[in-house]
Amino acid sequence: MTLAELSIPNDWDEITPAWMTAALSRSHPDAVVGDVEVVLRDDGTNRRARLGLEYFAGTGPATVFAKAVDPAHAELVALTSGLFHEPRLFTSGVVLPLDHPTVYTAIIDEEASNFVMIMEDVVARGADPRDSTRPLTIDQAASGVRGLARLHGEFWGAKTTANPALNWVEPFVAFAGLEYAPLEIAHQRLGDSVPAEIPAMTGKELFVDIWARYIGTLTETPQTLLHGDPHIGNTYVLPDDTVGFLDWQMARRGNFALDLGYFLQGALTTADRRASERELVEEYRSALTLPDDDKPSADEVWLRYRSSVAHGLAIWMATLSGGDAWQSAEICLALAQRYAEAFVDLETRAALDSIAS
Image (cartoon, rainbow, N blue to C red; front, side, top):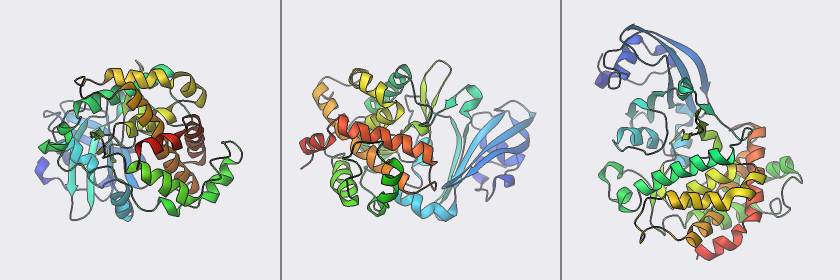
């Protein structure tokens, strides 16, 4: 079997040694897989699994991570995330200048609205995947903002918009549906744990007047390649405290601050954010490798950072309103609380008024 002959399996148990041998052939041409075992599976909006491998000949990874579309959720993924953005990014040939899982192969079946990716299991090199219940330290967050700055600087302006390898990258625009979230569920779960301004918001106010208005500003400035979804649940920490980024399905182009704010405001405890965010935002700006004429000023970066809380707050209030359908209540609650506090601390309404018409 060759790489060109690979089809997308309907179930992880259908992956044969010959299939996996072909999938690994570009990075491990001498490897011949002798056995494939499903070690762990986590099927939700997407189908995910950790696969254990044994080799008949040659060498390769002992485990890999597999990801494919759940057909029942393909339409939803296409609406909110972009169905093929992640596999297209990793077959585009561009090099991302921050830590991320190596992708061994990605297969797209547009007609069937499906894809499969076989990628590195980062846990095998000591990575510690994080979520909101295990926030980053300030030093780890600094590693993350430097990585995002390298990504953004590498693809600033025409390096994304005029790059033929990235001509499929869509602008970040507001997607429909958030305004229908039953916010009363989120308000009930939050209780009095957030400033009173937050539960006083209606769905229209939060999702249209604040979130959609903010999203509309993302293409009014020089754009860059965005991870698009760099909340702490899509990060991992390596043994040397380098922070890497998983799950590139929301890759888009737009203003840098969406990534910067969404990452930083949710990755730290509120106390650590308050104590360190000025320095961390400047750390990001200092790490942007741009000509002086292209680099945004310190005031511009800070203003855009303040306005970006609109995104994190809206996304996690909507997610918290969905019960346990998307994330556990504990994870959702921690993130909603952090973005709620940041929204008030950073006077996001005023910042948004300054950048949006």
